[in-house]
Amino acid sequence: MSYNPKKQQQHKENVEKAVENAQEERGQLLVITGNGKGKTTAGFGNIVRALGHQQKVAVVQFVKGVGECGERNLLESLKVPFHTMATGFSWNSEDKAKDKLAAQQAWQQAKIWLQDPSIDVLLLDELTYMITWDFIELDDIITTLKQRPTEMSVVITGRAAHRELKEYADTVSEVRPEKHAFHQGLKARKGLDW
Image (cartoon, rainbow, N blue to C red; front, side, top):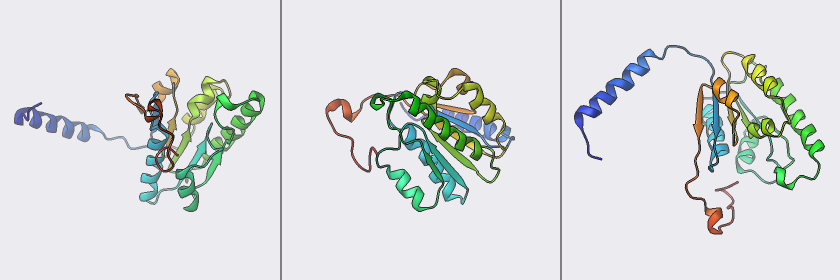
């Protein structure tokens, strides 16, 4: 691809016009989904960015939480409120009823924070699985998201985001796998994978 000054100028003008036309300011809903690695990392990146602007944040971790988590270690040391479902991954579970109860408890905490106007950004990590596994009702999630304070942004991560959730979201990013170290026999690495 070669540099084309005329195309570059047109691109610049298009971006400037889009920025000029973007006049509404409110909290947003971001969904980060797909089968690739990095969805949770991107979600935590939004939390760190908000912290860098002295905004108030909170995190609910669905699915994960049994093992060590570098992001949680750091953010809890900064007094970021966390609720972790702490049941691990579904393929390790022997008690689906217990998992569903843990999901409901995590969702109840999320609902409390989704009503708190002092929270600027809330991360609902791996929430998409709760819909897929019928642990939390989609209608309840969407209704609760619609009732949140206007200025609150929410980031939802996880594979296979439901179509209705994606339709309601302001931004949807799909993380697509191209290559993964795991498939080459490499172990998950502290500081890189957790």
